[in-house]
Amino acid sequence: MEKIKLVLLLFFMGFMAQGVELGPNAVEKWFDKLPHAKQKVTKFHFYFHDIVSGKNPSAITIAQSNMTSKSPTFFGSVAMIDDPLTVGPEPNSTIVGRAQGIYGSADQNEAGLLMTYNIVFTTGKYNGSTLSVLGRNPIFNQYREMSIIGGSGVFRLAQGIATAKTYWFNTTSGDAVVEYNVIVLHYSH
Image 1 (cartoon, helix red, strand yellow):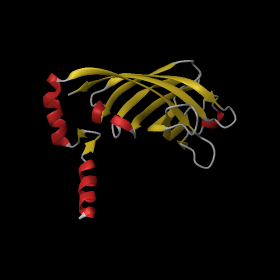
Image 2 (cartoon, helix red, strand yellow):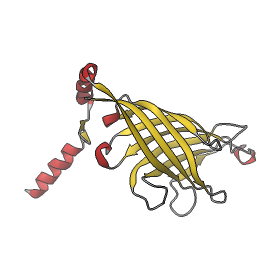
Image 3 (tube, helix red, strand yellow):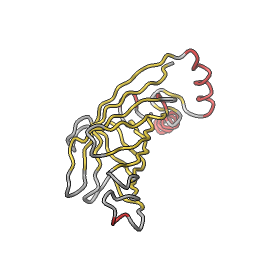
Image 4 (spheres, one colour):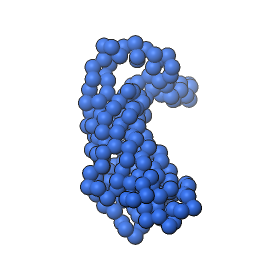
């Protein structure tokens, strides 16, 4: 009996993202209620750990052009990421989510990345919800702004800005910790 309860609980959880019902019918109901929903602003602060070195990197090169190694900006290099997002800058700080997606060197004149990834929340009231980030990241600028172009779960139809600032960068390994401040406009029902 306990196994059946557990299976039913896990099955039910597969249709929910922290209190938000999933599936096409649920999304349609959500849109039906949208005219009555209130807009809400939510702010986040976390650290993005981009680890390219060691035995267990969170960012790996998946493609590069024939000219990438000759380019001062590594133009044409593309990396897949599954970077931890933490409360503090320390590597052992509490993980609140993951940055999952792709970035690539898209500028031949300065170190500028095209970033396209999802912020996947893995704890708390936003567990299972995501925010989608798209933008240019000129990595040596003090502050960089990238657009929040959508989301899922609690953040359906989200829009906003993610501001990045390098907290720490190791010039030998290429590992980096980047501080993020995110402001999101979304709906609450």
